[in-house]
Image (cartoon, rainbow, N blue to C red; front, side, top):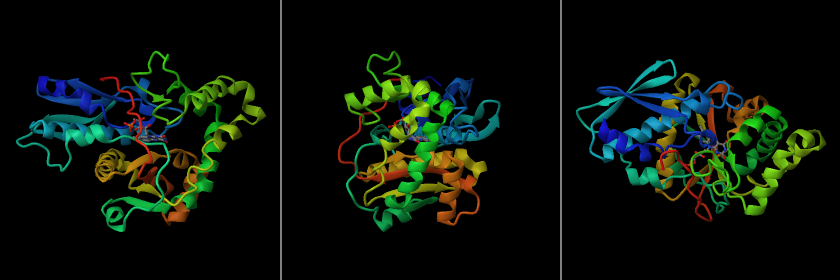
Length: 305
Ligand SMILES: Cc1cc2nc3c(=O)[nH]c(=O)nc-3n(C[C@H](O)[C@H](O)[C@H](O)COP(=O)(O)O)c2cc1C
């Protein structure tokens, strides 16, 4: 158990929506419960807990990889309970994985510009459960979803609570989305801070349109968007698979930029399901653009750093 505690900073490199790092580890005598902290969930923007369960799955996968790299025989037993998804416990052998702690440390979202170009067919074919769509084919849905997101007072308020747009923010080095992780210049960060502070007054005067306009050209290039499709009741497992896919891509020099707003908005989620020929819109679990970034991204903060 002591050895596991020492590895926590690497477990914590797992990705989570808004970088809330919602997971908790509760140490028992011979196993560790993996759970979540409700204060770190996103009840407004993630009311069904889809992103929470994906993030917890990614966290479990990270824990197993990091333990395996340290030579520790540790396995995961799903056992959903109140605010709990299961237990890490001792196993005869380390978890079998091609990934290492160095891979976990090297992965990160990148929201900057990507070089044009689609994923090679052989790479895309290895990403089980992920469907790929040309960026330009989803540009209209992204804009509609951004308008929906920024038009919603409560969603915007919740997002704002996790933004760290100035280095003077007291949680800048702990959690949330920093100006640097969002690839914003100082001026852009200042503009976003000011407009969000004035949001209640400016909402009716068109602020949502201005905020959504900032990402207008984001998908207007020759690139790929990946959509994770799977049974909604297996979101935790899907989070583990997503983490493995992100690590595979990262090892090949690709990064991802999640665009969850497209499936957070009911209308755009339904439209995307239609375009993909997927019957149940709730089986769209995650959306992210993928590509070779033009510049490295700043690493995001962690509570355990
Ligand atoms: C389930 C899930 C949903 C996410 N949705 C978004 C999103 O909609 N937009 C975005 O920019 N990042 C999104 N992210 C990326 C997180 O913000 C990111 O993982 C977190 O800030 C930690 O940064 P890192 O991935 O660079 O370590 C998502 C991540 C996860 C796991």
